Image (tube, rainbow, N blue to C red):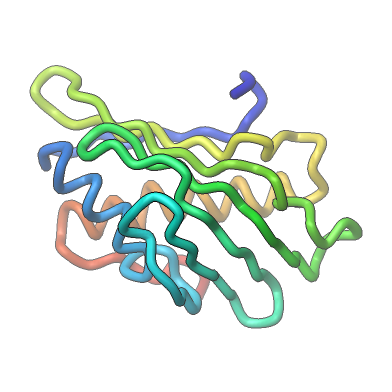
Length: 147
């Protein structure tokens, strides 16, 4: 992880195990089409947003109430010159207790300003984490952020 990797943080009242479970319920907050599983190490799932974005993630680390890490094994971003820009990057969620609340630090390792998609992708992640995943945690339902 470098200082230039995209990262954002949210804080909620829900305990770490609920945050962990919500992250792993990918289709409830990452809007588009999600298929496959994300419940245990080596599970794989695919994400597709219309004809703009396809990626396949492999779960490489799960520590209940503490950490989730996915490796992007395939990607196709229709809006970039390098269609596989995400391939080989890692998506990580670090969960910790902070002053009686739960902090979730999201980092897309390898998504740096050098990437053509950095502006759009970092904005997309910001919306997904701070609006949709946050809503899933605090209101029980993720919200559409790519309408």
